[in-house]
Image (tube, rainbow, N blue to C red; front, side, top):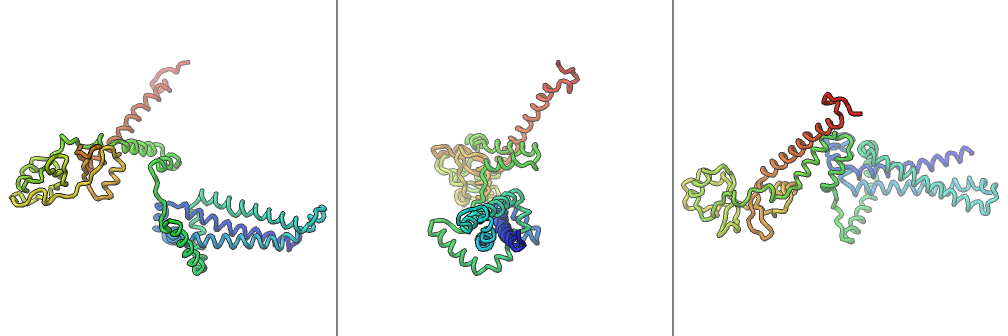
Length: 362
């Protein structure tokens, strides 16, 4: 192979590898989870550059697409214009008809194959396995490239957003939610998490699968306050109870007006002009079939510590507090782990009689 041809081959490979760098960087940035992005941002330097780029997908995706397209164009065009004529004599010597055409087709196929393997598949596979490392290595240069290509990226982003909206999508929407099943699979397949911790997470999820009907305080055990009571009358009842929150009823126990907090009546033991209904707080309502974990999430998102539990007809079934849910979750998780630990030594003893000082059976 002549020196000029060798240089041409190396240039084509260089263009392919440059495209591979862009493809790897894209996959690395896309596969970063929000928690990883937050941690990278706190590291400063390259980590901060990665985080800022990962939070601007329009910018880095446009930059990657420009880089991949340009690299692919040059590798294909350069290969067709320089390598094909160089290899035409080889096919002519083999007696191939129309050697120039055969050389062009063969060169295009080889360049396409190398572009797929070296420029797409291998870089993306490696980037998926080492997303943080690849992102920290190549994202800062990609950011510089994006800065240079800002006018082109602006035009591409504008066009992309417009078309996404026309197709009924939201260009600003992301899908970073992980459901319970995905989280379980992620934890069970993560080799860096010890087996004991994986079991603990499973126990928590199993406890969280319990329904509110299993953990709520039943209606018969709840201390209700009538909305018609004056604050003085309510205080007389509250001082004899250990609770801080009391559901407030209207005409019946199925007509709940809200709830009263102990703080709302402090210093108002002599107030006979204000009724309980006048100062009730809003009480969230949850169906008795709700599971524990989603209910905790709902209460936390509402900033509430208590909820009314209703049956399938909307009638009052009981109440549940955030503290009760958290306590039940912890107790059930610990109980499940304790039951398993009690069973495991017995199982090991049966498997290994020598552990009890006995001779193994033949």
